[in-house]
Each structure stands twice: as C-alpha cells, then as structure tokens.
Image (cartoon, rainbow, N blue to C red; front, side):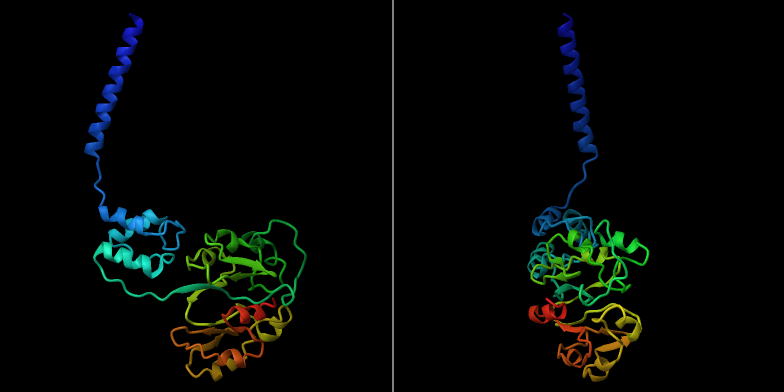
Amino acid sequence: MGILIATVCVAAVGLLVGIFLSVAGRVFFVEVDERETLVAEALPGANCGGCGQAGCSAMAHAIVTGAAPVNGCPVGGESVAAKIAEIMGQTVEESEPQVAFVKCAGTCKKAKDQHDYTGVTDCKMLAMVPGGGPKACSYGCLGGGTCERVCPFDAIHVVDGIAVVDEDKCKACGKCVENCPRHMIELKPKKNRLAVACSSKDKGPALMKVCSAGCIGCGLCAKNCPSDAIHVNDFLASIDYDKCVSCGICAEKCPKKVIVRLDREELSKAVGE
C-alpha cells in the first residue's frame, strides 16, 4: 500500500508540474519573427563578433529589428548580404571589401632590442612590462602573437618578429585590431594596394636609433603624390584611401621604403623574408 501511495503522489506531482509548465509556456510565449531564423541560417555561423554583435544569432536579431544593416556581416561578404537582403525585402548597398594590415616592418633584423625577455609570449603581457617589451621601438609590433591567437580564420601569423596578414584568409572581422595593445593594426580597403608599414611618431633621428625600417617623416611622399592622398602628421605618413589611386609614386619616393605595395612579393621584400 505504501508503494502504491508513493507512486500515485509522484504521478500527481509530475502531472501538476507538466500542467504548470504548459500553461507557463503559453503565457510567456514570445513569438519569434521567422525571418530571424532565415537570416541566422544565411549567416556564416563564424560567431567571430566582427559585426559588433555577440554572435550570428544576435546579429540576425539585430538585422530583423533594424539595429544592423543587411550587409553588416564582414565575413559573409556580398553573397551573404544579397541573401539577407532578399529575406528582408531590401536592396543592399555595395560595401567596400576590407583587409587587416599591420603597420610595422620592424623585423628582428631591423628593429633593435632594449633587453632580453623571458616570460609569457603575449602582446598584452609584453605591453605591461617596463619599457613595453623587448623591442626598443615603443610603437612597433610586439610579436607576441595575441592577434594570431584571436583570429578565427587563421589569417595572421607572426613572422620574423612581426605579424603578417594573409589577405586570402582575412575576413576583416576586426578581432586583431581590437586585441592589439599597440593599436597598430588597421582595416583598410582591399582595393587600395599601398600602405604605410610604420606606426612610429618619433622624429627621424630618434627612430633610426631603434629601427631601420621606420617612417622618418621627410614628406617626400606627400610632396610627390598627384592625388593629395598622403600627408605627414607627427612625423608619420598616412594615406587617405578615399583619394588614393594606388599609383605607387609615394612608394617609389620613400627613402626608407616603408610605403609598401600589398603584393606578396613586394610585402615579402618589405619584411625581409
């Protein structure tokens, strides 16, 4: 009799809990826009955060609610944007493909060290070391590989002391840009084939003491640019990609050859491979 009573009690409790959950599910039911599911399926599923959202599901919700544009996924590119635009019944504006670029050419041979370092190989840790890591240049790539570890696409690797981007793999998600403690990785238009491989704002003589591959701020690039696309501020040249036509005159005139063409052969020469 005791076993029978216990069985009945358990069954009754289970039935009551089931009824409660059923009622609660109906009362607190939140209707999900079916477009959100379709958009989530169209997204690449990388969950890299390059769109500014927590992941692809969050991005799908943001697109459906109007908080993000249909072409807001940097990984999916135009093909994914077109699919999402069709789901949302919108027209998609063409976006300029971008790629990450490391603004440093200070390889082990070109950049001098101020001391030997033994410890955790991580840029964020190196940045907290007195003097900012072993390299004497306080602006250049630390070479600790933080960007390499956070890249979800295996598109950036440390080669001879500096990070180098593989354009074929880079999706411009911005993870490397976000995690670089020196803030010397940028996203640039992929079609523009020129970039300044330096971040130093030191004067020329001071820079040459610590690195032979830096911008000395001479201004020859700016004086010879026919498009007024390059200027020198704080002893460092910078390119206005809205004006740049990739003619290459600035690279030819640069005496330190730190304005590089983003072609594999030329970039390999710049970093001394």
